[in-house]
Image 1 (spheres, rainbow, N blue to C red):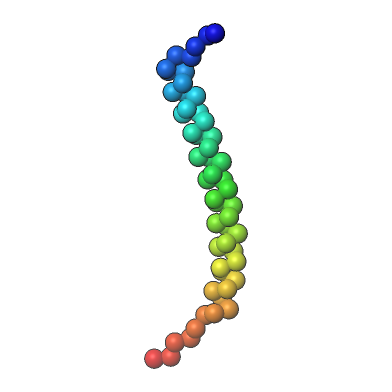
Image 2: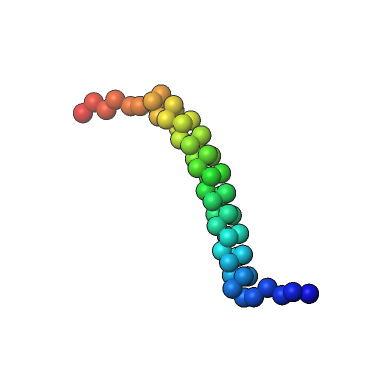
Length: 52
């Protein structure tokens, strides 16, 4: 059974971590954009005119 060298394990770990982080960033940004669009619509409706 061929064994992987420690450097190969480290590179595998780096590659999988990078893919995981990128995937999470893409999902997070898509949810954040949808939420921000919904919040902007609410902000315009709830705008208050302060009269001092």
